[in-house]
Length: 503
Image (cartoon, rainbow, N blue to C red; front, side, top):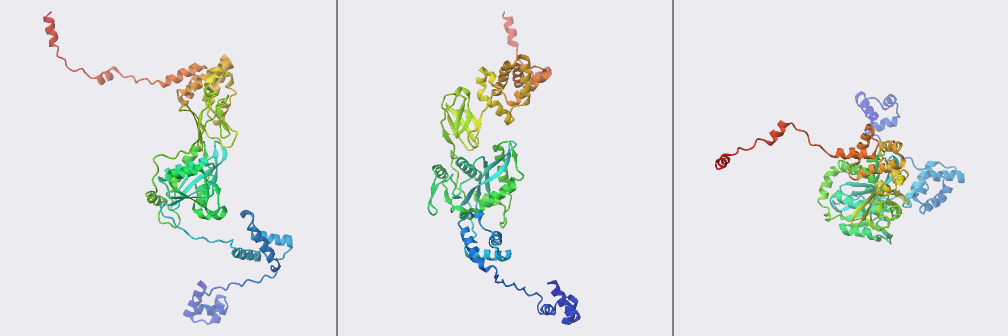
């Protein structure tokens, strides 16, 4: 374009001939004529596709491979490069990769593999989409893969995210309850994949046989469910949430977060959900927060009470004070051995009840055949069997979780040197029982104080711990105390003199 402009300027200012202009600018005289005829260069001619005679004998073979790909897994189909490689290696074809690529692209368009989609819009408060994703976090120092539940509002683009250790139906239901609470209302329609948590059986067309627990959730919140087509053909029907899972993971889970519990991780994710509202989606005139504010006014109201998603079981406590729930074992107070208790099963927590009272609470274990033991459940039993403390499973797990202070071991060793191992274990049980009436920090502080004073005895620890609980009133000076009381009111004593005169 600039060269055409300069040619036209030289011709207009200096009146140079076509030959002179071509020599000055180093171009063909045909280019000079084009520049003088129009300030815009003519479009370049596209080269015509050559017939590719060497590819001709292999076209039928390529068509057979591409037709067979329609029945193969999507990630194990031929690429144009793989087609070319097979032609060269297996059939000795002398063809260029470029010609094979052109032919494969044209055949795929004719076979309908290249699909076009219609852009859609969603009204406020009408539709939401739900999907699962996976992410890795460092949980208590170990890399763990967590499952991320995500509900996205189609109109505003706002998303609620929660993490669970397993992609279970329990987590699926709890994710809905938490999402509706976060959005402040219920959408009219929620769109899903054919998840096992919601769909018991996929029937012909769009019909689905849904699970009873999902139907109960839907009945409680009164929303409609919509399911995509089976397989990857239905992924485009909820493309917003599909892309949001990856975007949220890259934006808020990079670098890999380090957390001490799933509760801490979900607090981080909730903060990220609120921070995400400041974002403006490309092509939209305002941020997500403003669109969500208007959308919340159009959502259906939440029921008075949240839907109870917990399952219940009535296991029997075995001789080791354990109950088995979902093929994992959890400890309860040893006094309940042999009795039947009621267990409430949530996605991340197991609670155990007896006679209407909460007796145990555990973080739910992933997988099967795991064991969660709490030392407090065995302290009453260890008072009679103190020798079992050192090798108890509950103590080992306390150490593994980092809940056993190092100063406890120092005190234990010091007591053992003074009075022997069995008596030392008995006194340590007494120290641990202090946690039932005092906070863990105060007990640990008392242990450190006893070590510093050289009082290697469990009773000394109890004395220091309970003394710290008593708070002495601040000492006041006599003048300050009297000033606070004030002077007494004036009194009339004339009556006393009359009594004296009367005898």
